[in-house]
Amino acid sequence: MHDKQNGFGLVEIMVGLGVGMLAMVVVMQVFSQAEGQKRTATGGADAQSNGAIALSMIERDTKMAGWGMANSMFSNCNTTYSYCDGDLSCGGKEGAIDGFSLASAIVTDGGDKPDSILVQYFANPIEGSFRYPANTELRSNMPQPSSELNVGNTAGCREGDLILVQQAGKCTLMQATHIQDQALKIQHNPGESGHYNPPASYQNANNWPAYTKPAQLSCFSAPPAGALYQRGYSVNDLHQLLRSDNSATPAVVDDVVAPEIIDLQIEYGVSQPNQPSVSSWQAATGSWAHPSAADFQLVKAVRLAMVVRSIQYEKPAPNQECATTTDAMASNWSSWATFKTGSYPADWKCYRYKVFETIVPLRNVIWG
Image 1 (cartoon, rainbow, N blue to C red):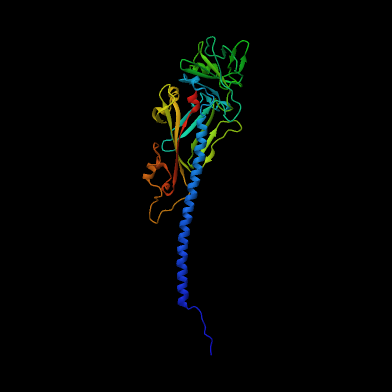
Image 2: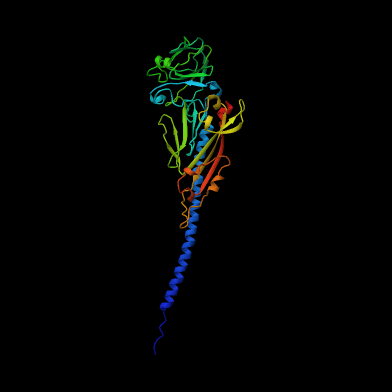
């Protein structure tokens, strides 16, 4: 008698392998979809975090725009005369200070690229070095050229302070080199301690104004690298939000705040004269590309729209174009901003996006 031998035949093994492979395909498909959904959710969370951080930082600094600047103090500065002898403390370039403005917030239109914003203060708000500007007036006419001012009082003015003299729509920026408290005089000589003071030849050649009594005069402490403390935000070609400022130790130059910032659009909120509320919104184009001092007095807020990209690339089907995001979707991203997607990366439709919007009141301007 022989024992019966049990086992698998070739056909049974092939059927088992086929069933196993089919099960493996199903498992991999389920795993792939689950992994893709997880990456999409994770990428969406990253975009949410990046956008929230970026918008929070811009909003925080913009809200403080004009801090300590007493907006009404400079409302008559329609034309401002300034000078730098090339020292780093006043900008590092000899001649009139490029773009010098007493505006609290300045928006630069990026054309097809993202906009940028620069906010200004009298001093760094996070430092304890601020002191309120001291105001006085001229008690005698000022000759031209000039290196000395006869004033009503010198209280609150110190050597090294910046001085702004204004009258009849004209303003001149100077630097105090010596305070004569008894004689009630402020000297503003050019040289090593007066980097903002031009020589007499420059004053004559550029028709610097001669002020008459009682022209208004303000003394304020100078930031370490520029006439005003500045902080700016912009987006570079690597889609990073950058922050820069002119603080002293050391100055922040193109510090990366957040990645995957694809677009940033900003507009001015403009009021009617002597009104605190916004009546219209203006892009930084046309006449608002370089607003006058009078125009800046009407800016009470800015609004921002930011486009943030998920890091997850979603590959299209074979022989198909990306359709994760479409032109129709992009056209509805914002209630007011126009995003120029033609300047976005060629594969921009293969990603998902989050859009953040906010309105930032310039509270120091409104209260001022």
